[in-house]
Length: 281
Length: 288
Ligand SMILES: Nc1ncnc2c1ncn2[C@@H]1O[C@H](COP(=O)(O)OP(=O)(O)OP(=O)(O)O)[C@@H](O)[C@H]1O
Ligand SMILES: Nc1ncnc2c1ncn2[C@@H]1O[C@H](COP(=O)(O)OP(=O)(O)OP(=O)(O)O)[C@@H](O)[C@H]1O
Ligand SMILES: [Mg+2]
Ligand SMILES: [Mg+2]
Image (cartoon, chains in turn cyan, green):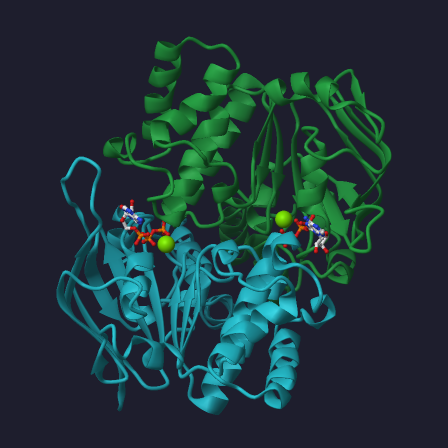
């Protein structure tokens, strides 16, 4: 498997007013391979957004190395490398540059020398992917919260990036809208081999990931497949996280004296288990 | 304070080529001391509606009544001041309400503005920092040098600090970690129950709407299309679906299990706890 991104003992501190420093990211190492979907989870302030900024060279590590597409990020290769990364920040307002939705989505394309004839259909296509093609001439700052997030996602998709970094990019979408957007990204992953790094508090979304990175106070506390991570229910709770709905419900049912075999992460699995253990007999 | 919306219409940038209508003939009736959840898909007009409830926007048609103040297109800005003292609003994007140099000053702003002595305001700020699970050393930091979830907590603290009697929350848990979500929703609920705060929550979490609200209002394409108790609203899956909304997880799971059992589980299970007990009871009954 080809490596797309790696962090090697990366640490970072913001400067504090009182001159002191507390590490926002502390000795973090992990690798992301081509075509993988990685979920990063962790309590508020655990260093997730800081990691995202280190991955695109908005910040540089104080110690350790960040490699993207096998090259260590530096001021000389930054722009070249960034042209293959799509990123959606936590607050879409900080990201808008165009005065209309279509200009905004076109902006990065133009900057990367995409010819006009190609630019126009790409802008339309990516806005259609997030159901915002009806808003071409609207001002991005004058949209609803969820509409802003959709436009920001379209901007990242229009770049046809090799690596897509989403920092809580769907936090303000309605449940159906969130599923739709995630489906679009998942389809791109299947069809084009897109690599996805998604920072999220949505435990159901985490289940879609190939690998999960759990952050706690700047450190990477756990990493593994979703079902491996969610086997550590008590530990996750102790750092402010939780289990997906079906896993929580399985626990409550067991506490109520109902026999549940195995671990179930989705509603479908749990319904099947209720069927097998309690009905099919 | 009772709040009513009568045939409220609103257009952004009215009278310009950019005019954009966001509300049509919206109606709502919110009793003093109640807990109302407003749900609806992206762009359905929820935030626009909320901004009418503390006079940040004036309806372009119809009227909003807050306590004994009536707001129409003709209402003067001066008359809206009193409303702001009583109605606290937590915006959808916390960045939109943070502006001071430090977190402490930001949380103290409301209380000082409404005439609370400085020492008391400071004490309240520190209490709220603790109550909202923020690290103590955050008080002297700039609110803009915080993580997304920390900003959200400071924005909420800033509103609770001046003790409004109506609390308006626009997706207050977006960006919070799972524990923060739970704790802060419980905190709002406690204030609602113990201090009688009228609470109006816009949320995409059907689970929170089902668990906490006593009344749910559904918005669809700028109109208020449905309202009722959680049982009524979430009991009508068909209609919700036509507004592109789904059921809370506990209710959706209840429906799946009912199909499996071939009979109803009883009342709508609006929370995970209710769902677990209903399933357990049904299974135990089946074994006997
Ligand atoms: N610009 C900044 N200046 C100083 N400190 C900062 C800055 N941005 C973040 N921090 C601090 O660094 C730590 C990590 O922040 P980060 O934004 O990476 O957290 P996060 O995991 O993304 O949290 P959230 O889930 O709330 O978004 C926090 O303690 C935060 O207060
Ligand atoms: N400042 C503005 N200027 C012009 N149009 C706006 C403005 N703010 C919102 N709108 C439009 O008004 C409609 C309603 O927006 P509103 O923000 O009330 O939706 P919402 O229900 O809160 O959606 P979300 O769940 O995405 O936050 C949308 O179509 C939006 O594009
Ligand atoms: Mg963050
Ligand atoms: Mg909104």
